[in-house]
Length: 40
Image (cartoon, rainbow, N blue to C red; front, side, top):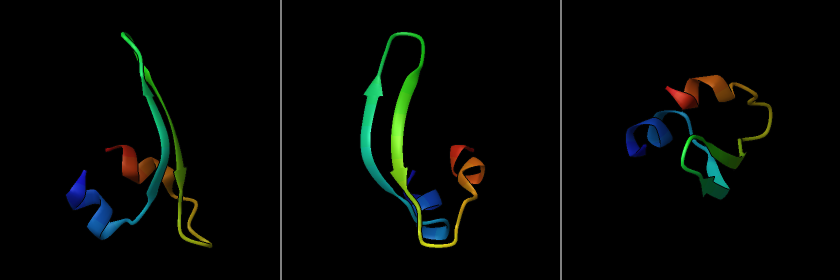
């Protein structure tokens, strides 16, 4: 996670980890909508 944050910054507002999936709310830099890269 730290390596991705260094190259593609984001802030985790909230995260909920459930038994079979998770939910996360992120804040990305202004003008950056490439959230998919951060899931890798």
